[in-house]
Structures are given as structure tokens and as C-alpha cells.
Amino acid sequence: MDGTQTKLWETSKSSTVTQHTFQDLPNELALAIFSLLELKSYIVLHGVCKKWKQLLPSADIHPIRRRMFNLFHHMLQHPRFPETRPWTLKNLRTSFNRKAYIDALLSKYRAVPEEFRLWILEWPARMVSFGMWPGLPVTFHKENTLDKAYGMNWIAWRTEDDLPGYYEVLYRHPSREDRWLPALQFWQMDYGGSWLIFGKDDPDLFGRVALLKVRLPSPGIHHIR
Image 1 (spheres, rainbow, N blue to C red):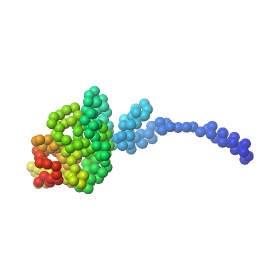
Image 2: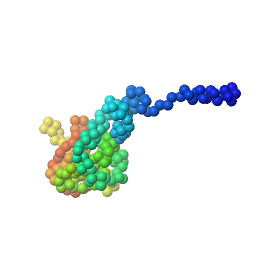
Image 3: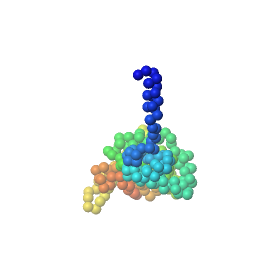
Image 4: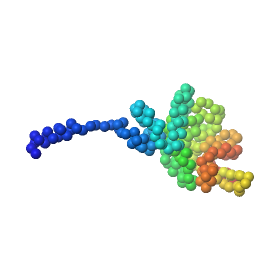
């Protein structure tokens, strides 16, 4: 094949090439990809094009991510949402390392509830509610406002080695023996606190929130025994 023939062949070949974009993918393939996305990417794709915005609700995403997205969307639709942001945006700690925080918890607790793990790893920090977030200061709020809840953001407290504290709470049941369960306190009020149960050996309690009338006297590692 001489040079002229080669040039003609290349011209003919290039004229048959059809360019495609990601938006041209079959719906089935696009949905399969969407189902693997983390929350941030799933949110961002809603603004790419009208087709994807209509298609994304049909993606088989993790049910926890679905609930988080629904909450995200609900918050954005509230007419007073902008009024809830000033304190949070001003006080967010940009150095907060989500993965390191989960790893630190796993160094103390046998397991971390999946809902809590995904919330820490994927929830947009700029969208956190009522001052409750490990990347916000341990601050006591004296009243409920649009952007802060009454109480203290205890989930942000760290030990001297910058690790979350380890706690156990007593679980009493009328027909069972009392037992101690690992738990993480995430909010503190004058009359008690809110705790997330980390006891994996108790599947009925693992990941549930308990309201306990226990007031920690000061930041520190406490075994509530």
C-alpha cells in the first residue's frame, strides 16, 4: 500500500468514528454506576444534566445513603435553611480527618454502627445540624436556636492523645442480667446525655441511641460503672 492509499484509508476510517459522551451510556449501565457512588458524588450528579437528574432516583444506592440524601434535599428546601448556617460555617474545623476519626474509634471499640460510620465519612460538613459534629468545637449552647441545639457537642471531645474517649453504660432489663455496653456519648445536657450504643454483641441495641441521666463531671475517660 503506497502513501496515497494509506492516506485515503485513514481518511475513510476517521470519517466512520462516532464520538460518545458519558451521558450517552445506556440507562442500565448508568444506573449500575450510580449505585456505587458515595453521597457527595451522588449529590453532585443531580446538577450535571436533566436526564441524570431524572434517572438518579432509580439507582439502587445504599439505603443509608438514600436516607441521607433525602435529608440533604429536605434541608435545602426549607425556606429558613440559610439562617442555620452562619455559626456552623464559621466554626468548622477544616483539619478534621474523617477516616482518622473512624480508625480511632475502631482502635477502642470492636465495631462502629454503619449508619454512624457513613454519616461521619460522607455527610457534607457544611450541612451538619445544630452544632453536632466531631469537627466543631466542644461548646455548650445555652438555648435552642436555628443553628444550635441546647447542650454540649460532646462528640467532638478528645483525650490528651487526640482520640475519642471510651465509655461503657449499664443496660438493665427486667428479664435479663444487667450488663455493660460500650457506647459513645455525642451530646450532653444538664440532665443527662445522648449515647450511641456500640455493643455489637447485642444486635437489638447496636446502633441505637439511648438517653441517660448521667452527667459527666468534666471531660475525661469515664467508665460509667
